Image 1 (cartoon, helix red, strand yellow):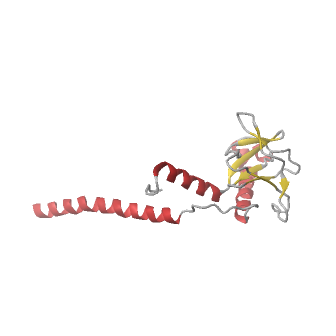
Image 2 (cartoon, one colour; image 1 turned 60 degrees about the vertical axis):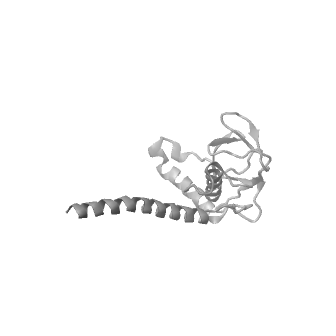
Image 3 (cartoon, helix red, strand yellow; image 1 turned 135 degrees about the vertical axis):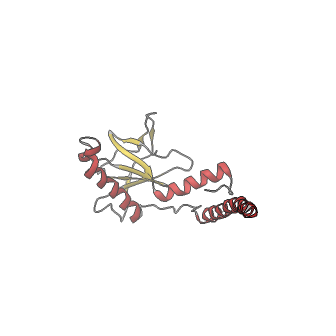
Length: 174
C-alpha cells in the first residue's frame, strides 16, 4: 500500500512538469502561427465591414436597454489598421479627427474609397503617416460629430502580438 502511494506521488510529481512543458510547446507553436505581418489594405475587408455592421446592429437593437435613446443615435465609426484610417457612417466628413481628452486635431482630409462601399453607402479613408498619429480605441470627434474609434481585428492581433514579443521576447507564451 505504501509503495503504491509513493508511486502515485512520484507520477503526480513528474506529470506536473511534463504538463507544463506540453503547454509551453503548444503556446510556442501557436505563437509561430500568430500573424506577425499585417495585411496592409487600402480598403476594409468584407469581414471588417460585417463586424462594423454587427456592432451597429447590436447598438440599434439593444442600445435602448443599455441607455435610453442610445439605440436611435447614429454613431459613425473610425476604424484603422497599420496604414489607413477608415470612416464609416458619415456622408460628408470634416478633415481628420480630434482626439479625446487632449483635443488635438490629427489626420488629413478624408477621401472616398474608390470602387468600394459599405453596404451601399460610401466610406472614406486617409493614409496614416509612418510613426505619426493614429486614431484611438476610444471616441473621437470628426468635425463636431462623435465617432467610435477602434482597430481592425487583424491589425489588433498583429499589434498585440508585436507588443508582447517586444516586451517579453519570442519565447513568452502568448
